[in-house]
Image (tube, rainbow, N blue to C red; front, side, top):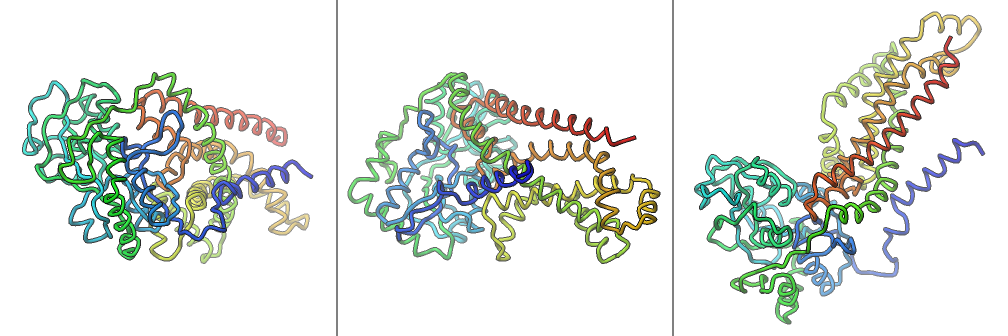
Length: 490
């Protein structure tokens, strides 16, 4: 068995495990429905990963688990940034959102909302030395940092503030400390938890954002009213027997599941040193690199090169019905952002009935993107081979396919290796965008850890080290391949 065949078999086995292996399979004998819950995992104390166990936990997580137990559901948690949660629900990627979603008229009109399970209030956070903001009216002309799709972002805009988009509260707080924004509007409980955990005296709660109480709910698609009703019955049952109150009291020392249930407090989650954070996250990041980032890169690059070769040959064809579509494909891929392509494939195509799981969707999108750029590299490399080579091949009786395989492509390969290698290096880094497709890759692990620990510089630099090592190894392999190919160049 050749080395290439062995590597192909190993890659196939790895992809099989990633796309549907035993680790993600649900027991066949269970008849309870499996519902996918969309949540951030970076919004403590509501949804976050325990630094000691790395398990997803928080007030919202315990509430939805209690609801599932009463309703007879089995849950599968899908972690993603907040701004991608609603597109995921719309596209059928998740069935429920449990992430402190506040009621507003737009959401009431578009989604099926449960009964409220949390009551809180919004507050305005400023730097400790800033006394210029005392109410919502003072936000006019100021800049705030918010997740763009949250209710707090809408409140800030209505007050006349310019909203800068961030992934979560921890990032917003960092921007505020650095003086890049003037304020944050957010849930008072999340702010209290941040202050208790970090011990920060650089920011403060300056004022209430609204006199009205904010109500948080579980969110379902409009056509899933039956699920919403089951959730309401479960929430009412939990409220009546005191279970919801117990969950709330364990986190906040008050019953936030009812109005006027007491003043919430939080002790935070305990601080960790930078070294402890890096040591705890080193193995999860390594696993994400080996199980997701590298396989995603390898599969996308191989499939992209195969497609790129076909597109390149179509581009140089004299047949217009081949060359024109190929040229249009290259123009579209190179003329649109990769992030947009990811959103179209993962969130847009399901509206046309084309639904892909998260990993295959990422592979498909990255492969198309690679093909769009690599096709031009291969085309230019083929055209760089002197025309006399083709003419000489024909004089000795070689047909078009034989000429390509034996004469043209081997010579074009040497020319194409450096730019194709650059495409591969770019792809390694571009896979960090896969997190918007609910893929937990290396960068997503770093994001979650940074949101929980506030160690942004250390963790992002650590993630960068992983990417650099992979790219350095690929660069070394590229140089060895170039030297090997140089032996066949006169």
